Length: 267
Image (tube, rainbow, N blue to C red):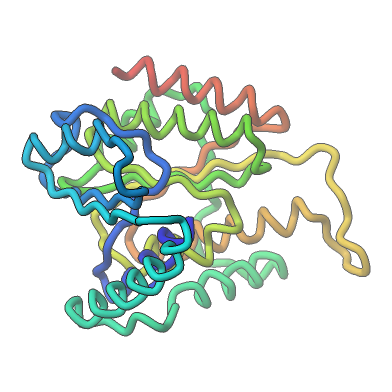
């Protein structure tokens, strides 16, 4: 996650950027196109059969061999320098986050009821295969799919979202990213709004029950998260990105399982 934030927030701006794909299980070599580069950190001498298979198939693989865990700090410093150098090559400023602030302002407006002018966000049902297929049909070539889950970050949610991303990768061949909202807004959120337009976004929201009031305010935590989700949706929309919202309901684990079944039915 540290590398994901470093690369996404530093390079994803001015319509360009490097898309970090963190946490995705390795597929067979023929499951990838020519738009990937694989980066691995591992202790020297550790076997890496999955990476070896990718390299043997001609995919670019960079392996950083550490002699001991204590060398990880040096590897992190090298990654920071490499990211800054990549920013120079891309012609962007690697040390700012211009589009993060835009989403913050839109979220503030949504919380205050000042976000007008656009059509209401139409949320799809997780069982709506027609809407989901139409959304996937808009996937550009050499694009990635960004999944934003505004649900509690539990072990069960991680497992379900990982299953969803792997289903989508199998179905489309596209790279996938997964982020839990609103925490991802300060990492991959910059890339989503400022980076390449070749992307599809899936925003997953729930209906928190019970909802809890934020002390010394007139709103709840659920309303706070909903405002941030709306601000993110509007910011993506304003930048011409294709985004679909799915309402998972109060029983969001069941909603996610239904969505998984729906994606599976499209294969």
